[in-house]
Amino acid sequence: MGQVLTLHRAKIIRDAMHTAGHKLVFTNGHFDLLHVGHLDYLEKARALGDALFVGVNGDPSSERLKGSGRPIVPAAERARLLAALVPVTAAIIFEDDTADELIRALRPDVYVKGGDYAHKPLPERTLVESYGGQVHLIDFLPDHSTTQLIQRIRALPRI
Image (cartoon, rainbow, N blue to C red; front, side, top):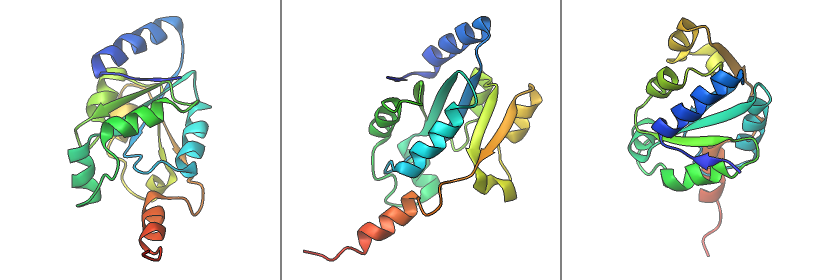
């Protein structure tokens, strides 16, 4: 089972991995209302290396980026749930709108994002490529998103 780490502790583990020649995969996101689409994405990401670290947007960041009322699940709970998933080695909560600080500190070998970034700018791409890291886009599992899940919940009849 993975752990929820501070950035300082994650960097220590990353340094040991680098020394041992292990490949670190990193991704980040909100992961609000965890669903099978998230699991599929994380399984595919983990298959690209020896360990998977997941950056979890903190609550203020999620609200800024996703809008009022989000996140539904607090960051500490989202990180704990992610860390408990088999593909995830560690989860790290961060408060910025991009994962630049985490990427700069951890220098992952592979940075993974969803396939929706194939046709829009990926803010972290330049940073990852500047130190020789690879960017890998993973297609989402069709018809599985937090937004769709929220819409289905809102459409339920009120009892």
